[in-house]
Length: 459
Image 1: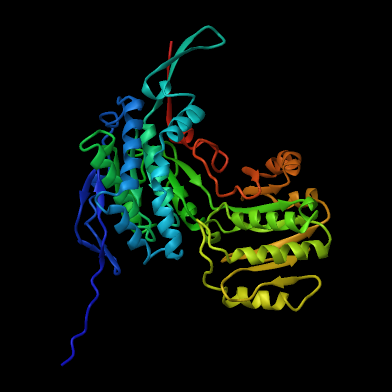
Image 2: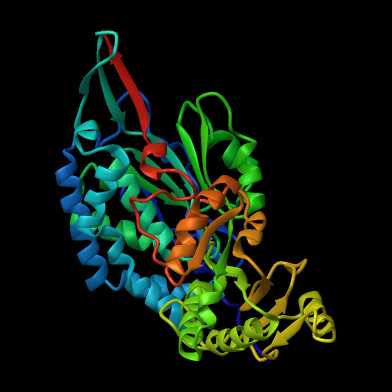
């Protein structure tokens, strides 16, 4: 008689106002969570948020201690979350491991202070009412009042969760994080650390994290209401943003980190020598391979000035560097399949209008063309478009273009206003796309400023 082994679902913990909650009351197949208690996920409006009157300096001390805790991982929580991600995140294990090892950077003291100064003008407006005098002689007081936010967190990179906790704590508000199905454990691990360094503290009590299926109206129609929360902060794809918009109305706003794509623009100076061409290709490859090209900042289309021969030489140099292991990239990944592979194979037969560099071995493919291809380059695929003048490429930027990496610096300064006018939100030196720093605008706005509820007291 044979016995069939049944694989038990992975247990996912919830966090309710700083308390770790275990249980398997809700089974989703491959994982189970505690039974969802909607009443426990809201904070009553009969009182200010728990951390409203805690001095910001004290909160920053706690966050800095959390960063140290994440680096040390004394309870093994980060290691467990990382290993659990191996089963749900398509990224290479090495990339995931390196990403988890840098979570502590999100709580760097200097970075936290920079965010508050740059986005809100300093801690005073968070710590109390700041008096100002209007042009008409009236006195008014303004406060960045702690908000009540629901966060639909993206699961493609653990740093998004850590950044959400850091920003949330700085605003002194209350925050409910909806766990993404491809990263069910990072939020619990980070919030476990927060409770460890500040047990019972109002900041710890300001966070909850729970899972429900995205779009579940039985949950979202009850939670996504202005009597409980001020704003919905949504990361994710088009479907996530469209679903979130169904609940937006007076008193309940949407702060959307919309799905974006990024490009590169490279001047003819890159062809001045073989050495400079290789250096430029290396910098461009850095921009392509951020999180194996899964991040919004990752370059997918590169517009390159020069003759076909020059651009082909650059394309060959770029392709060789797509298969190099980096901090945020593995040496190879799953090769393209299906319609995308058929499209590339068809283009390879259309020389000289198109030329394909690389093979279907998972180490990257570059498609050189004179117009952008009509499919979305993804999975270690780059479309290099030959242009006679970079100014002609500006028309390909739009409101969905997040980052444009430009070489040389002279071209960046010349093109930045035209790119901004087209809707681009971020222009960087080539090779710097992955160096996203909190405190600078993100997707065209200052996150802390958008999270906050601004309140006036006027004479």
